[in-house]
Image 1 (cartoon, rainbow, N blue to C red):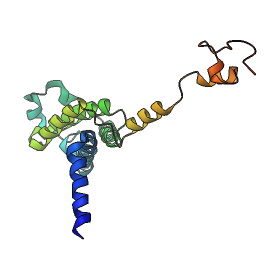
Image 2: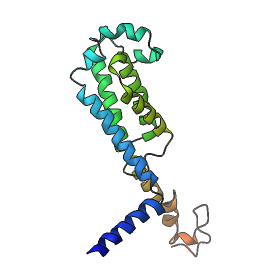
Image 3: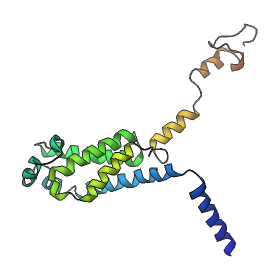
Length: 192
């Protein structure tokens, strides 16, 4: 009864301590941070105009002295529909980070977008927003797309694909080994 638990414990420690599994942790971090950003955006969706949009005139004095400068004007549009579209685009960036699509670029854009949005009403922000920004910026420098991402699937598909032009050589000659490097036959007697 104890032996299977001991074996499981030994295997678990071996996986954790003897193998290089940090990329799994980074990929999990990418997903969790993306879910946190998406959750923040979804929970504030109904009050987005009052917090950061056209109804956030109450935060104008804070924007004038904000250390982020022109970044707070990214979401400073007059049209509520355009603001909602930009807000939903930021939600789309969070989803792209979660699924690992163009991970470095979308992570950087999400970090900039979240900073631009949250700093439109800086009194509403807290230290969690700062940690999220720091984490997102650090994630740009890491390989967070090695596992469980569309980027990893693209790399796997590219590495399993045949070399470019290999089909042409095999169609020109009966077998690829009888072809010259240019794709043509070495001699006419070798090709079908």
